[in-house]
Amino acid sequence: RVGIVENNQYLEKAVRIYSNTYTNPQMYRCKITLYVYNKDGVIESRLEKPIDIRCELKKNAVL
Image (cartoon, rainbow, N blue to C red; front, side):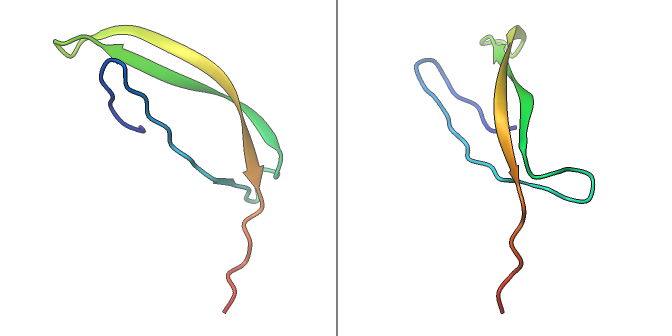
């Protein structure tokens, strides 16, 4: 969940995805789902958008 916006507003959120023993550092195809609510709080529509997310190696902490 990223947040809630009203009419004529937008919201951006930067995220980092790191690989682990089950995932390789590469590009992954994902779907972002947006729910549009009406003024009564009822879901009015649902939008899905495919995006590419880069999964990267996590760098070791430097002491």
